Image (cartoon, rainbow, N blue to C red):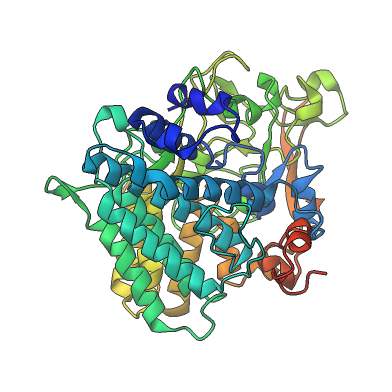
Length: 531
């Protein structure tokens, strides 16, 4: 995809015409390929884990600071506004739709390309709507005679449009591709994104009256993905290995992803490795996220574990697949986040603030294991080729469980939550027991399961907002752990401390429309409570 888009990369945007691009199949396909590169991914600095109760960005000046301190404004949105980038991408999709009729090619190929761009435009709109609420639905390219002052469509109008587009894409796209086209949008990707959009629309923030029909639509959309067949067998299945599913693009659980290779890969493995590997410790996992993981027996962690010197023993398997703690093995050696009891640099751990590259030690004394390829050994030279997974079957199971709970079917809700727990525990039958709760306790368990199963995958930011609990979760201080080792006895003590005070106001359920957009378009209305 990268190589065949070079023509479009070097040709000035004001010099190509519909005729020059869309009269040639290879150039048209290159144009479509280029649209995939406009998707943002969570390996970048704008991963949403940094502005939720999951993590702290190790270099928190700038965008994460604005959000975590409640200081985002229409003039200061930082990197987390997708408004400009995704409207640019939507414009490029609209150019395709305006010109695709010129392409003289096999109808099956035209349909597939149309399905891909229909899906991608819906993806861009779904992201904008999740962040901003209702946005202007622009479906044609602007020209010099166009009236560029367009009002926002309502949230419900946007959802209706996105769902219709995804239904159209699902009809045009195949369930799977051959190897040469592996990774393109599929029928399953369109149905899965529809599931997410409808789940958000049914949730408390957008459905305060709890209209049951919205939950029914969300449930039906998720079930369509679960039941989808490819040559008579289910199209997707849970990967038996939770940790490994994020490391390879061949996992049977992946529905839609961004692919990388070792030549045009990413540096995530080094930006997010502990400083003892000359990494940047970029994702500093918060103490509250650490404590969200259950014990092996299904109970929640007891603070006394920190007092007795066994803070991270007997946790559920996903904890060890997701977070790096002091004393654990990572990249072939034991991690050392501890500091000397006397402040002796030589007695402090190599991953601590007194260790190698002390300026980029993790400020919470935790880093990320999830997504990491621990076999890489050459800092900053070996590119990572793990995919960024936008949608996987685990999310769809949780979407379905939540929707079925709201429809009163607790048996089905528990079943799909427990399927994920069974996968997590593997063959260890006495670990992570099935959820048996009902009523409000079951709903809390569904929310808890979603927090852990989908940790760091850019879901938590949206989940706490659609559930209308962000005023609780995002107003808690970000906490860290300080680990001190006695120079003589080598015994460690643990102290949980506040790293950063955080602030969340009611207006922060939605992002503000950029001031520059409202100045250009007087018909745009700002989101509530933003000046």
